[in-house]
Length: 272
Ligand SMILES: N[C@@H](CCC(=O)N[C@@H](CS)C(=O)NCC(=O)O)C(=O)O
Image (cartoon, rainbow, N blue to C red; front, side, top):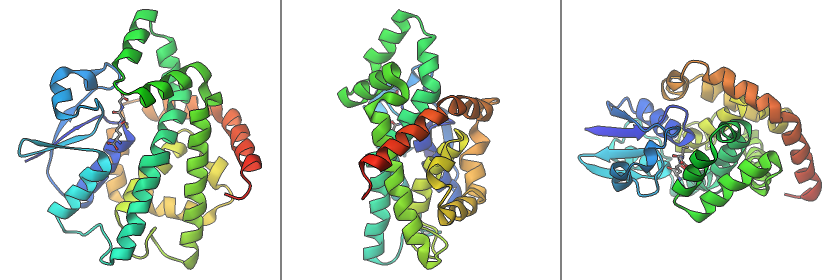
C-alpha cells in the first residue's frame, strides 16, 4: 500500500501526484497542513526529519525528497515508463531534476512567499511569527524565509530564483527547437513532470509571461503539459476553494517588481 503525506498546493507534492496518476496507481492520502505547522509534528518528523512534504510511505518505510520519490515510483512500477531507455538521455533527465532541486524549487518558494505567505506571516502575532521561524529546522531555509519576509521581492533569494527560471526557460526553448514534443524527445518523462508544477506556479501567480512571452516553444510545451489528465488529477483538483484567485491576486501585487528584477538580472548577466 502506498501512502502519501502531502499538502494540496505544494509544488513538490504536485510532482509526485502527477507521477502517481501517470502510473494509474492507487494510494492513500494523509494531509499535512503546512499552514498550521503539522509538518513539525514530532510523529511526522519521524517519517520526514526535514519537516517538509511530500513523504511516500511504502509498506511502512518512508521515502522522502520528491525527485527520489518519483524515481522510486518509476523503478518500482515500470509501466508506463517515465525514464528514457538511453543512459545519456537519463543524464539529461536528471539535469532537469537538478535544475529544479537546485534552483527552481527555491525560486518558486521564494516568489510564492513574497507574493502570498509574507502577508500571512505579517498578519500573525509576534509570538506566532517567532514560533513559525523557530520551527524551520534548517539554517539556509530559515535565512530564506526571514529574508523574503523582511525584503519581499528585493530579497537576494528571489533574485536567485528569477535567475534559475531564466536559465531553465532558455534551455527549454533551445532544446524544444528541433520540434520535439517533450523535453527529451517524443517520450513524456520525469523531466516534464519535474517542470510542470514549477511552470504552472508562475502561471497561477500571473508572472509567467515575464519569462516566456518571447518563447513560443515553451508556451506550446506548457499547453501540452497542462492538458494532460494527470495535471488536473495531480494539481488543479487539489486546490481549495479560492486558492486560484488568491494566487492570481497576490501575484498581481508583485508583478511589476518581479519584472524590474528580471530586467536587472538580464542587464547584469547578459551572456548566461
Ligand atoms: N527537496 C524537497 C523539498 C520539500 C519542501 O520543502 N516542501 C515544501 C512544500 S513544496 C514544504 O513542505 N514546506 C514546509 C516548510 O518549509 O515549512 C522535496 O523535493 O521533497
